[in-house]
Image (cartoon, rainbow, N blue to C red; front, side, top):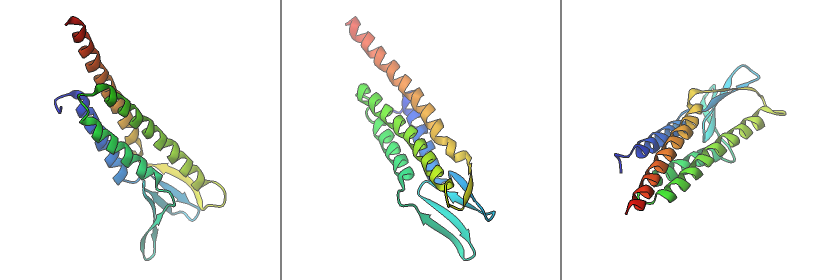
Length: 157
């Protein structure tokens, strides 16, 4: 199980997702010259009396990353059911793309209208889900290669 290259790719995907969950995604620049730090679960604001965490009404970003990490962890143990493993991996990659769409909508809502936000600066950690998508694609190709190998050996029998 662990000696397969797709398992290594999936573990690297999970590591990228967990790192993205734990670190700031970007900074929302405010009109007064300060900035709020955007995490996947909250927005933190530096104030005179300390750091205040503003919990968003929908922590969807954190939930999507948790869902993908759980799917990929479960996906590692499906090495005997390659067709199901590929389908779950595709679903996880679609959810990662959905993560970026939700993040763009969240940032758009934060920047429009009467809000004090005037800009957004992403961090390096925001690119880790893209790296996870690329690693997931490589894992998918490796699983597909295993499936084609097994099918070709079945024809020889």
